[in-house]
Image (cartoon, rainbow, N blue to C red; front, side, top):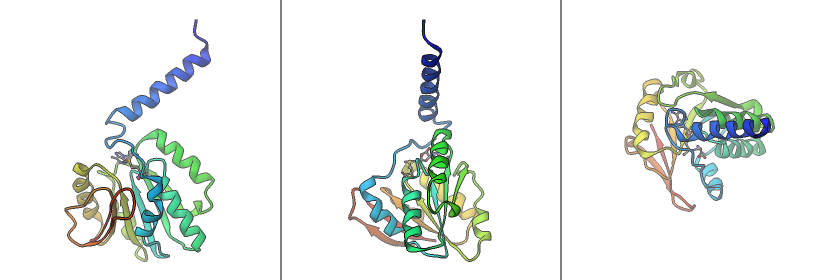
Length: 185
Ligand SMILES: C[S@@+](CC[C@H](N)C(=O)[O-])C[C@H]1O[C@@H](n2cnc3c(N)ncnc32)[C@H](O)[C@@H]1O
């Protein structure tokens, strides 16, 4: 017979597999940004004091925590939001946040990026919002359209994929493993 510990671990494993495999829990598959590209990603975010960075579909937080660490070292007051829908990744985000030196400025949100109301960002009039996205190209327009409903002005840094629905292209960074594109609306 199987021991209770084995059964518990097996059920846990199955739960995690289901959460990652079913689009209902994670419509965009989890692929982290390449670790080697972190310096270029952080530099493309142009971190400043009066800025809010929102990682839409933050995954395990590789980008948001790296950028927040850079802000911390520079003494910047930059705010960071990690938006995620996958419960396993949300748990990882909360654990990592608890040990981060810049945690007072890092907020974890359980939300669906396609339906989320972004107007709380507009309420913070002092801060310019920069969205970091690494999402499947067929979801990019839907995401940007939802943001536009709530925000007049924002920047977008997109990893790997161009954002064709934003006309004001600012910068393309070709140095890393994958391309980075930044835009202003
Ligand atoms: C390609 S991964 C990018 C992860 C992270 N931003 C990075 O660059 O390493 C996309 C992430 O979006 C999350 N996601 C998928 N659909 C979502 C939704 N509707 N709302 C919020 N997050 C979502 C997935 O769980 C996954 O972690």
